[in-house]
Image (tube, rainbow, N blue to C red):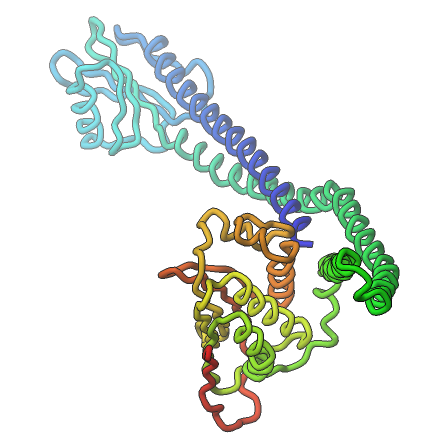
Length: 423
């Protein structure tokens, strides 16, 4: 059932949207906290280096072991650079010291970053000169890389886990709805089947009464005609409901599918509808071509063609022309077009007309029918992995049926063009 599948996927989509938002916000917050923690640790190391260093020449002792590589430099008033104790990965040479000291002294601020050297500095002035403490920021960057790598991987695994859980949870959540829809369709199918017998009896009795009582009185003939007509309409409605209720069985019941020449099937129905168009004072035109092969249920595809042609007869304008064309569509598909002249279907109704019992236009509501024909045709098309729709151009309603084309079958001679015109 397509409605249930759509409901299930929609449930999964919104559920995973919430999960993605929660995981994303959590991951971003964790990354920001780690970044803030690393920055605080580096700043603490710089502050301690400046606080415990004696600017009057006494040796500085590192107050505690730290994970952040650091060192400090004393710039004496005469410009001599003296490397102080620290915990750096290697003792920097004189050229390196001069470069970083120059950048540290050149800045107008007491603290800053040296991006090219991956260092952060803190400068204080005293009687012995300027003390500049440097800390390696690559520690902070390595922490962020670890968080992004392992945290991102963990988030992806958690997301995939929730995706699997959401799939099974969605199936479990929509199961009551699926069961309710199944029971509803089963009820409609059973009720339609049960109604066929009494309707058959009523129709038969109405025909007998019409034969026996015909000519007795004008009112009696009129009443009997009304009863007979309504019985026929009711029987059509019940049969349509029965077909719609069993539409799900069409998807599974593909054992009766066979290879069909759709061109021959279409030509057969066109010859059947020729007198109908003629009686309605309308024109139909079609040209047959090479055989086009599809795989499906012949009876169901024939019913789709009947619905499209019947729709063209009913709703095309007086004296209007209907063109039927069967042509390739893309690489592996074919398209059946039924283009009829008439009142153009409004854009907002072009999807709604394929819904069950929809009869939007006033012109349509004046005709016989219950708004089930196009709904049945679309159901059959979708069960055959096809598509059906309508477009409008130059005062014509153009219904199309797209189906997957099979490989060419046995060759036959090309059929001569067929054109049926109003006399």
